[in-house]
Amino acid sequence: KKYASDKKLSPKIEMLPENKIDNSKNQILAEKISVFCGDITTLEIDAIVNAANSSLMGGGGVDGAIHRAAGPKLKEECKTLGGCLTGEAKITGGYNLPAKYVIHTVGPQGEKPSDLRSCYINSLRNMTEKNLRSIAFPCISTGIYGYPNEPAAHIAAYTVRRYLESHTDNVDRVIFCLFLDVDIKLYEGLLQSYFPLN
Ligand code: ADP
Image 1 (spheres, rainbow, N blue to C red):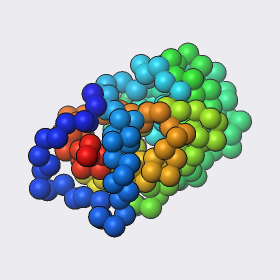
Image 2: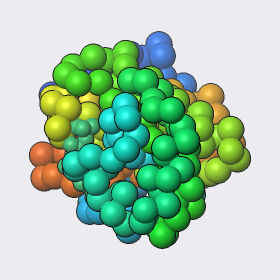
Image 3: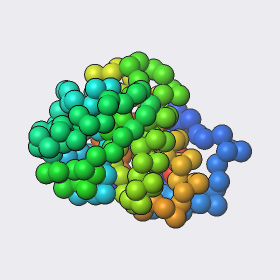
Image 4: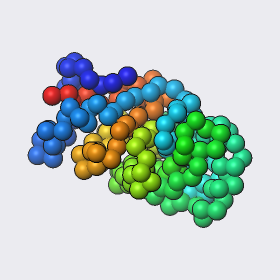
């Protein structure tokens, strides 16, 4: 689903500061953003992001789902990576997944905005450094790691917006993969704020 409608924004939604937004790119950026509601392991795309833990050895939530769907070779490759620090990201193959690559990032435990921002930026950097053009994000840290959904969604949308402004020609598509109703409701309004069509 594309967020290309001109529906009235919820007044509760905090906008990007006017002076920070490059409005000349609204149209082109809005066309690169999608949401998908469901299981990230089903997406046929260049890269899906895994909300991993620092061992990179697999775990619960989306991490467990990705390892199950990718098969045991994913863990074999992860073993060679020496773990991953909070806010950083490391890329592996996708193995049995329809996605070509998995970008593993370790979100903060609790509400730590700069770490969460780093997860999005470093994942996007991994994508562009490999000349990949499409990526899907789960709602990093908002499950087991306990980041509150609304501030996490703002960081996700804001950080992707800023990255796309500076790397517009390198990225075809960013998908926010939403798994819970609470996030579906949040992103509905929020993406229209951060990616307006005019
Ligand atoms: P974290 O430890 O970073 O909080 P979780 O996996 O616990 O990671 O949760 C992150 C988000 O991923 C939550 O919104 C959770 O509902 C969602 N999620 C769980 N399984 C999947 C899946 N298969 N596809 C997409 N999102 C998922």
